[in-house]
Length: 274
Image (cartoon, rainbow, N blue to C red; front, side):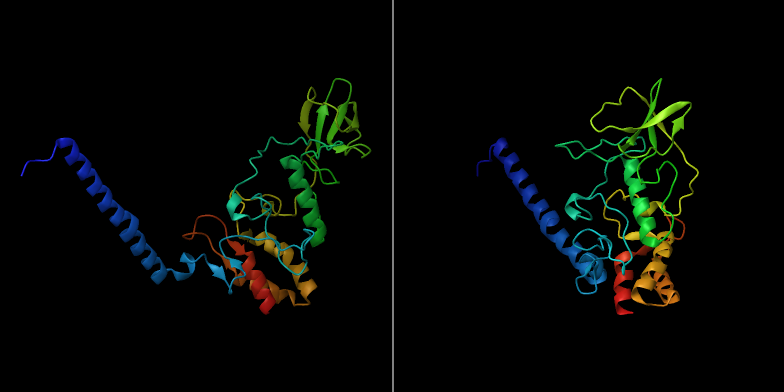
């Protein structure tokens, strides 16, 4: 039998390789790994669904009403920057950095934009009001925006406080401080964040979003802050709520990495059963 041309032999060899690799890597390997996962890690392999479909233990969710207000009988999750909040198809952070401190104030026909600092300040103020504690923190004004000045030779402007708001300080280094006029350009001024004397009571994870935007956990400190409110709203003994918090607290990974954390969904479902 006459030998096949070398070009054809190479093509046939390539087709055989594709067929073998497709069978191994596209059929056999996925079936084996799926089978092992279903046999040994059934819950995790199927999304770690909690209590018959209330959600996943691996993906956070909001506990708010239709208007976005916190439901007071539930522990609240940390903020999320994933889509409209905890959207698995839009996982990600806000991409705002620590130097993002100046707001774009809204004007007619434009909504404006809050800086990362003002977002933190507003969240801290709201959390403080919800829990009945001080929401003040350094670099934030009492009305919940970033305490930032644009300093000019003859004046200073509290750029995140739109007129007719009263500036958080009356003077700065001998200059009179003015409220900001929406639409006016203050880019030429020197940016000066002003640190106040406030000590933050609201934990950091209550005012910042996670890198994924899907974090299902909160810190033990944030859970402890919320426990009195949840106990009061549900008519439960505070010690019982604190016991449930401890039951749903996971330790450090491998005993030394990270910090203990509380799974919010599992804790709230346990509260509903209490």
